[in-house]
Length: 315
Image 1 (cartoon, rainbow, N blue to C red):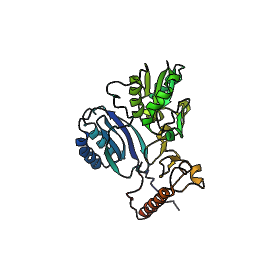
Image 2 (tube, one colour):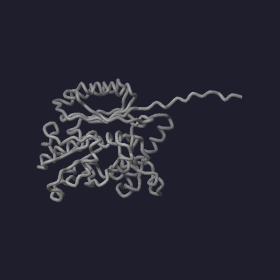
Image 3 (cartoon, helix red, strand yellow):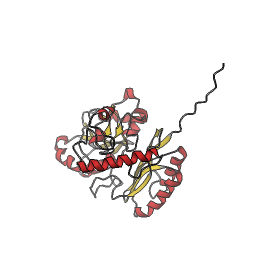
Image 4 (cartoon, one colour):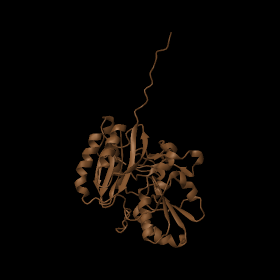
């Protein structure tokens, strides 16, 4: 008896676009309704930040939806050259669309820093490893400690910051040790190291370099056997991490502290989904954990009904 023919239909993939552009928005509040409508009509989800210094965000949706949303964003004042990094996800990595107004699209807390007036030298992914291998160059990771904890470039300096706002204080405390050195910096998609490069130039550093397109572009274009990247790259969506080729990694997210967690972390007796993990067990009060348990219960009940609970964390 002939076996029935089964046609394999590959799963529909979602396109994920991480984007930013420094430009001058005189009135970002007036831009918000159009951005919300443009992205909603395109059928994409994610988070977009608007500030007087430009736009930053990550969105996900069908290929045609991403194309439409990016086309709209490029019509914003000064955004014709907006760039982005793309990857794919089997599931929609965002629960909702959020467009938010901020004082900064990436918070450094240094009002005089302006990447549109001065910025470091962009380095393409294919030229990056040659640069950071030089003896006269120091390599600084501008991301937060929980991101660095799951992957970084070999030999990189980890400032140990919990937020980008702490970077200037770290630099002031440590800059004497790096006097006379050229500085190379990197981050997830390029935005933090671009702003940090502007800051270091304003602080008198002569030569500053940063990885164009960030880790995402490097992992997209660099084969593993030629790479100096070690580990996974944390991403700000429900995939949690990606590796070479921008394939989704093995990490999950603790929805209490927002840190990446491994299978080993989840196997710990300490771990309680949505309540605590080995990284944050000592950081919250019992009252906090009680609230987290109640939220987790409501999230699980909503999932059973096929709904999204409004309190469910969205990266």
